Amino acid sequence: MMIKKNNLFIKKILFNQFYKAIMFFVCFIGFSFFVFASEIEKELGSFKKIKFDIKINNSCADAFKLKDGRIFFPGTDESLIYNPDNNSFSKAASFKGAYQYLIDEGFVLDNGNVLFIGPYLTEPAEKFRSEIYSLVKEDIKEEEMKKYRKRIGMSDEQYNTKLIFKASNFWHSLTKEEQKAIWYPRIQKDPVLFKKYQKYVEDYENSMHAQIYNPITNEFAYTDKVNIRRTRAQKVELNNKKIFIIGGLVAPPGDDFYIRANQIELFDPNKNHFELINTGNQFRYIDSNIEIGHIPFITLLDNNRIFIKFGEKIFDDKLPQFGGYYTFYNLDNNTFSEIKRLNLAYGEFLKLKNGNILLFAPGYSYSDRHNKHISRKILSSIYIFNPYTEELTYICELAKLRGEGGFGAVELGDNRILIFGGKNNKTKNTAEIIDLKAKKSEYIGNTQYKHCNHDGILLDNGNVLIFGDSSTLEMYIQSNK
Picture 1: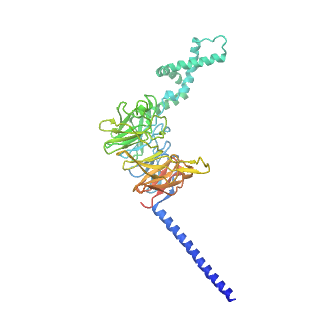
Picture 2 (picture 1 turned 90 degrees about the vertical axis):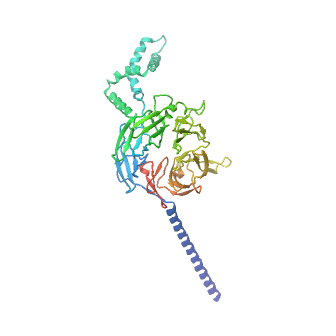
Picture 3 (picture 1 turned 180 degrees about the vertical axis):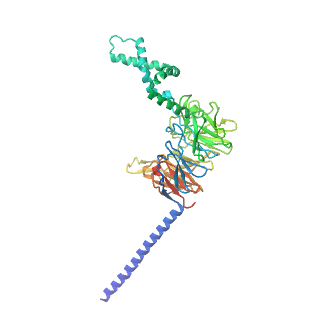
């Protein structure tokens, strides 16, 4: 009996010790998690949804930070202004004229106004090409019937096909002026079509002017005519406050697509005037066989030069896989430097405040060829390109696989960059912070929404407004600012 009592006593003591150990472990884990969670909140910040307090139709695809700290979302139906101070939205003026078409990215001027170039529209005669030819083709066919008789053995269908072919050839052999002399009197007799045509002519003429938004008066106004009708051009403000414009997509008619796109214009905000700068053909060819193509970004350097990054001649917004080329434009003597190759393929880029450029080599995943069940992941490598020294420096890799691009990058300050979203479905709702000084990138948690091809703006209070669609607006709140 004594032995049994001793055994029970020992078991009771062991159970109590084990229970205390378990409770201590649970408390320790709970306390550690609390400290860890507090540390995350303290060091890495958090994400918060933003809801509209008014009903709008704006998709919030683009946004611009005004001089007073507010955010302007331009729209075709209605524009929007977000006030970070009281987290409220208000409606603003919309574009003038036919801006339901493609609109260039805006540019905030030193005087606080916002410049918009575009849209580029096709010529009215080209826009209504099918309607115009429908008005004249029967008359032209009748004229061709007088010249070309039906041959023996030719069926009615064959004869009609031949007439259609000959009428088309005759029509396209005429100059635009000769064509208009034929179709314009006919279109005037169709009230519905003529009204639609006249409205488009008005829109077309207006598209030859840029627009400026004044946030003080909340109004849009036209500028003088642009010299080159383009959109998605690269712009930078010079020391004299004029706006340097180059690249983009240009609209016909005119000379070669890229010759005109890579011509330089200067916009003077004081005179509201665009001036075309003649540089000849010095910025047309990489060599005798390769023509210069799309310009993804430019940067003004402090030695009165402009760094210009471009690719080979292509007909879309994509860059060649090898990274393309670059040159420098000297503002003092209106000349370009020798063209050099940037030996790095990249998917996204970010211009830093110090003039350097952050480049992201595309990340991807693949199955091991020896074992298809094993997936290999190649994270996006991050480099800094210094346009002053022309040096390319490896920094680190992204913490998450984000696909070939589509992610947002915002410079926070203190050598830190916020990264969010991307084309990889598994990481569209994740975020990380790159520490350029420590040369590492750390995952910081999930965003409230999934983001792909969305952007962000650093607010005056240190937070980041993430936008791209009105249904996915959110705020990154820095906890250590």
